[in-house]
Length: 499
Image (cartoon, rainbow, N blue to C red; front, side, top):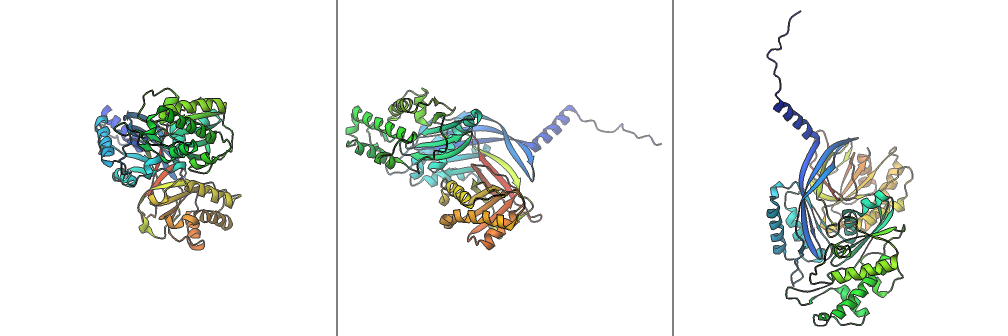
């Protein structure tokens, strides 16, 4: 036997062993700096957070999931600057954002991801998209969404903590988010949102300008005034009695809609969506938005509007007429977007349908998640589910739309075709507005399903079908260029985070 000499073998120092451990940890753990920016009818604000992610292998995918988040800085609340020509004052808003970065000690190149959400009256302003794109210019890091009424209702329900509260307690809650120009409703049954609606009542329907004159009189306020046979003008609104009559009628109308009281011409005229589907009976009411700050005693000042008296009147109406407790779910004025975005990385599975690889790359495509039961597919129900979700998306403002679903069982042609027909039926009224259709399937039928949609069902536009990808409600998706070989598509999933 030969004696082996180990005398020259290197022994790692404690510092080297620590470095190796950190390197191994970093393969499966990430920490991102994120920013969430909310530009609304009444107020705008932002926050910075540190988000900790950890890789969790799941089937074909390797998805990073959130294991912790610390909010490291919150901005003051800014009254959203609107100019007299019906435009958002982009310069003033930009100065506010820049000042927040400086005060927080954060530079824009330190931000890994984020979300910019425009809501309520803000999305009606003529330059809303330009402001949206101002933030999107940062290398595609931001999810940027102009939230329609139903999407805003969904965001508020999640961001306030109402969805988590409903799930934790195993009860049905009706969440009410009262902003500056609109009120959003979300019926939540044991953690699942089963109904969404919105109507035009808020705390800044009537407001003063920089000189203190009552010059902001929104259309909904005029509808209420007409119902009371009152004439509204900056002169008449100086009379507090007039303002209180308007506020009391607004509170009564809001309560009518919230409690599903018999409709009348005024309440019908104030609805911004279809009435709230009443699939379950709530055990309590949760509230968020700027008006909720007053209801729960977190704000006592006034800001040249009707938010404080509206909060008082609405609290009285709800307490007297609903018989339900009013609960603070945890977040109020900051409910709409609490987190920023989570990066998750996946690569599509074994089969991809990509007839035109030049449609990639694409960023920030919103996800519609639907249920497709491979065993017993209800075509009409699936089509209705897709249509309802599409109502929450401004198709003209996004680069495409993703339909995501799970497929289990054998890829029998009849079942695949029934699922494809349900999707085509739902998309047909808006197919010309869809720039790119992404189909993301948690299951190994991507190429087969994509070919069926394209060649048999004759989807007329650009299409990509991926499999082995797991998506959820409120996700956005980025697709990289095709890697050939081996013929896979990198996928980055951005998920809005909530308390």
